[in-house]
Image (spheres, rainbow, N blue to C red):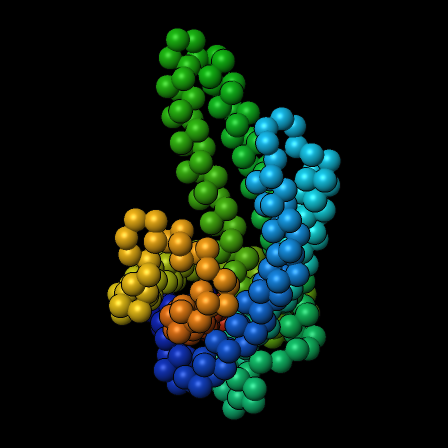
Length: 312
């Protein structure tokens, strides 16, 4: 039976970061441009509408909300709904592009142009896969939650005086079992993305046969990835705290009673002038962290796929 090394697979992302640091920097820059800039543009576009709603709310003196305020809220809500849908589609596409870049860096390291970033059929198939997986996951979670809630209700009604205790125990047990089932299915389908990239075709349930007998190893990789990401978050948190402490001397205006309110009441350009160095530093740290996490998370699965398909 084909197999793979849990340790080698789980640490593949760190090896990739060490071998291709410039690619990671390129991913960080691309992440900022692809995800943060659209969000900023949305804030700039919808900011006046929200400011108008706030002004109407502040001018409201009790009673029912005015028609103008309700109309503004409905327009803002519809705008945010449309933006959330578009941003979900766009973020899935961006994630697929970076997933493909990591896969390409592992499988074909010589194709390093543009930090392995491409936009082609593989990226589009991966985008479709991510969207389908998210929709199926939401449906599955909804159905499982509904079944667990139904069972808990039946136990609570039929349990008599001790029904609430039995219901709590059933709910806890049901959540544990449901979580285990969802995790097991996710691990069995974990080769879908590498298969989609390599075959340049949509692949999902084909992963089931490839991961047969590999459940415990896949679980080991997943647990190690969780530990690694938590460790990175702690490290980045320390860096952020250091930056905030370093910026304390420059942001003395925030000290004292009511200082924050006074600071925020200043013109936006003045506020930006005072905080932009620290916002820039935090942005650089956040972008690099996101790029490293992309490599650490995506690389193991394509390494596992390569090992399993090489021996079959």
